[in-house]
Image (cartoon, rainbow, N blue to C red; front, side, top):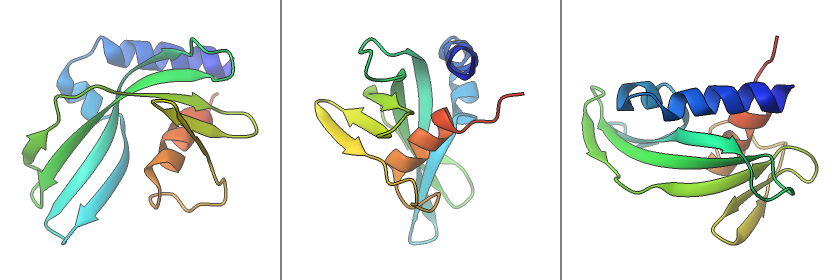
Length: 122
């Protein structure tokens, strides 16, 4: 049920405007206090590879201290996420096992996994 609900949410975001994708920010890193880089979910759906739960597209944006966009990467970075043990994120052909004890905000791959796999479902 969780997988179906998250797929519906991700598919709805895929059809939204760029402003809506900013709401799907799953990780932000600050550099020097005045600039930050945010990673957002732009698209997503069920994974094609049965070993994973989701296939997503990640976008990258850089902001100044006031929240003004300085740079928006035009690339479409694809990733696959597996929620069950061993928790994993696949980028290209590299698999990264997720350390579930990692604190939120310290590793973008953990934050991507958490955004998809630990979202509350009512």
